[in-house]
Length: 125
Image 1 (tube, rainbow, N blue to C red):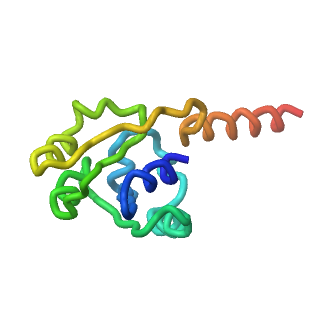
Image 2 (spheres, one colour):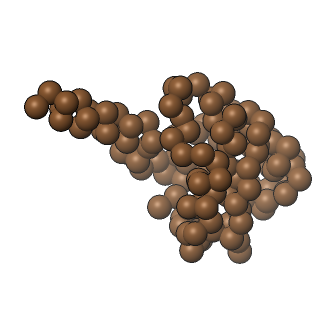
């Protein structure tokens, strides 16, 4: 949903994924990311709206953004765009940074909780 919306904003869509190491540093739990970086990239690259997939190993994609210089940086609505260092990078060269409206219920964290709840329920029977 987010990626299709992001693609409509520009001529192409480049998706930058956290490497596995970068994702682990986000502190979302020892089982994250759920899928390895190569598997995640393959799935994302298969989407019609995506033109290119790449990774970044840093905590934020500021170096990659400074190198690619996208006209528009798009993030999900759960981000405060003005607090992100990558927003300042994009704005410094005249680009725009915006957040797409957050869609409640579509998060990996929520999916993990639902899966675990289902497993726990089945384990009791």
